[in-house]
Image (cartoon, rainbow, N blue to C red):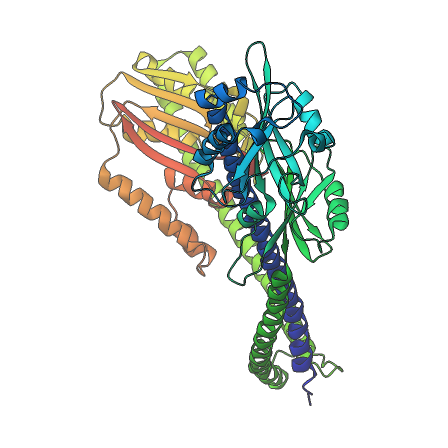
Length: 598
């Protein structure tokens, strides 16, 4: 009768949802890992740049310190102070002085690489210099006067300077060098400059580092105005790097950026100078890793999808077979003639099963409503019957009090007692079957206690502690009078006067409470247990099938009556407690303020 459309629909729907979920997970997984790789690469490049900056600063600081050592040497100062003015180079004509100067320089260059040299140039262009390889250079003054950069240095009034990469005008103009220059002067006279040069080949060895795949770093040096000065690779597209760098400039100590998706570059300003170093690394290895990650991600999630799809097929088949079987059983089972099952025209087990269950549930709902209404009427009858039980019991006790008072008092007292009795009777027969304000209950027991006070005179003392803010709360009628009657029937029965009764009403934690306390005999433990046991039996009896006569025969009067009516009125949210405090026996009743019923 039914086709497998539902299973196929359920299977395809689950596959679609799983596909979306797995695609989202795959995308997030790829984004997270690729971004993690990029961030690690940026951090590594930036960290390498910081390390290189420290190394280069150390080199330049060492060169500057070396020049300071020469500058303060007594031998060096003695030589330069004896140089006479002449048109020829003093050191070219004085081999001994030249040798002494070179020895001073060699003490500094000893153990250094062969790519370093130190020169001294006087203000009159007398010059001498040497390198680690013991190469010497002498230049005529005419040639040096054509070197504008050198003349500008001599004219400057600085103490020290770090020169950007420039041509080596001492040994080979094809070489690029970095120079540290210090001015030699005394208090009143200037003696020229000391220049310590290091070839860029050594700097490149310092800055160019290889990883496990022998992929080298390249670098660029810019001046303080971001003008290009030097590149470690002539094939490097310096213009593209500068364009991207200018677009990504920031105020941070260094920033990292990508160039044409082929290189990653990190820039930092030297701590010792205002030069800027841009470290560049080829990221072809990173691109390969990302492509590899994409392939692995796609393959992994494809395998997972195949496994999940097979599992879903088995699961949907396992779930739909019982549905089809259940639907057939519902259609063939014998139900009430009032239950009509509408067979779905669609070939869908769920629709047919839903319609069948809805028809059955609707009938159950109607029958349940009938049962609930019947039970409400039964409980209402029980409630009214228990309330009616109070009238003869109360009249009997009241008439006994009036009879005793008539024997002991005059007509005025009898008249007052009859007035209070009239109030009691009117209150008893009014508001039948309805709740009343708590204030009415309190007025009722005030009339009752007036009668009892008239009878017992000074032997009875009544204490009132009332909270008028809860007087408008609705409660069942005649719930306080049994509590007061209990004081006389049980509390004061075996106790000699004086007798005390304390009535207290209050609210706490969203509940209202009324307590009746007396200084009579306390409840015995057995009597309290018996009272609460009977109360539990009464509560349980509401869920059993009894006729009205049987139910009423099991009910008592007084406290049991009050507690049962509170239980019915507040739907099980009543409060009932018997306690003993010093000389007082206290009975407290109450319930929630926000759950009042009319």
